[in-house]
Picture (cartoon, rainbow, N blue to C red):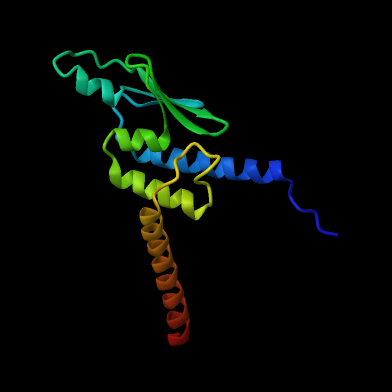
Length: 149
């Protein structure tokens, strides 16, 4: 008799994948005064820094905090609270935001019921076609690389 995972186990598994993906993208970011302190990463707020160009106050005032549903960015100075995707788009990391979306789509952690918005159909069609092209290319490589050997 097979034991199927419960709905809560499936959700927890997806949330752990989401936290892992968030952490990978945080590690890729170039953050000023970055310090890892257990379940949070302290840094200087990149949005406040733009506002206070002429001031030399660059004390770490923001952090990424690990929650049960992903990593959340908070800043004490500008009172901003952003989820990972919002942070990437607000700090002009458009390429990272796009790669982040792809990673979430590949793991089916996106859309309604998550902390991330549903995208317009035109963007989704383009995203799906890119993912299919990558998969098709890898299948082609596997098929013809193995037959040549």
